[in-house]
Image 1: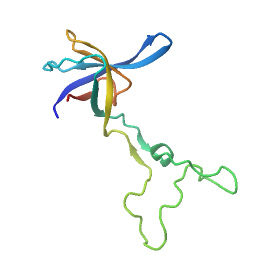
Image 2: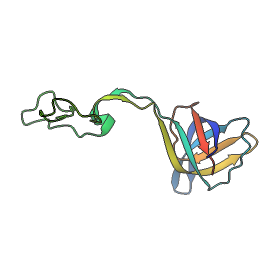
Image 3: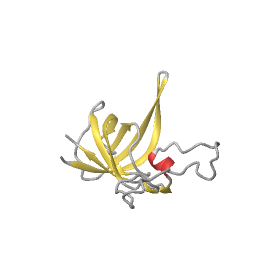
Image 4: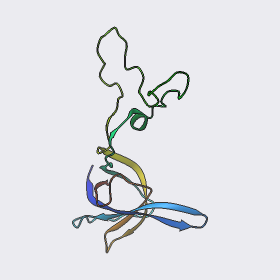
Length: 140
């Protein structure tokens, strides 16, 4: 599947009737010669924002433990990570660690508008990455 290189410019909003539509403005690469129609669906990949070292509550959505009933300093701890028997931790156990900074792909993003002269694409919703971050737009 072919893709077009692009850069994320900024986020914005379109006020239409009684609704607010969040949009993302994207600048296409100079060598891109593809045209997009409003209403068509695209697949967009980018590198998500890095969030640094995060605990299991933020990283994996663990609910944490009780704040009462004899608990001390374990409110956001992961709890048990395995039984005593194997005397090791099995691979794939969800633990604290670096979060974000990985490639993420969003499918079926709707094209709101396309300016051929400025090579500016407006997509409905958010795309991964920082402002100025590189994106790959996959064309069917």
